[in-house]
Amino acid sequence: MGATIPQAFGRVLREYRLKAALSQEALALEAGIDRTFVSLLERGHRQPSLGTVFQLAKILRVSAATLVAKTAAKID
Image (cartoon, rainbow, N blue to C red; front, side, top):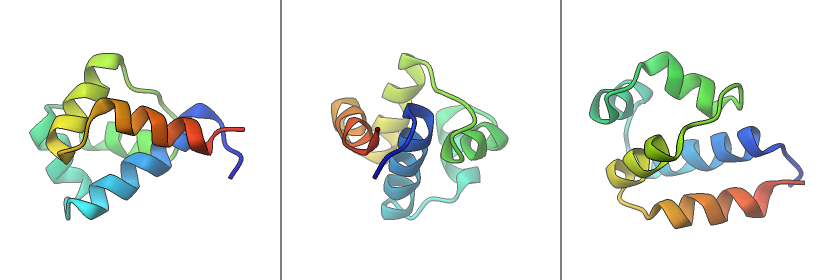
């Protein structure tokens, strides 16, 4: 797969957001973050704080550990 950590996390986030049938706007609203931040995360231009990872995981109905493990599987 080969990606940086931010790129890998962005791919994982997008995958789970789509599985949850949420738009970037809907995810951002539920997480209390800006939609542009979700876009930046998904494109690998920003990295979330640990608190944000847990908040996103809760909304996506997946564990934070799963998001991290899936991200780790995609990095160089």
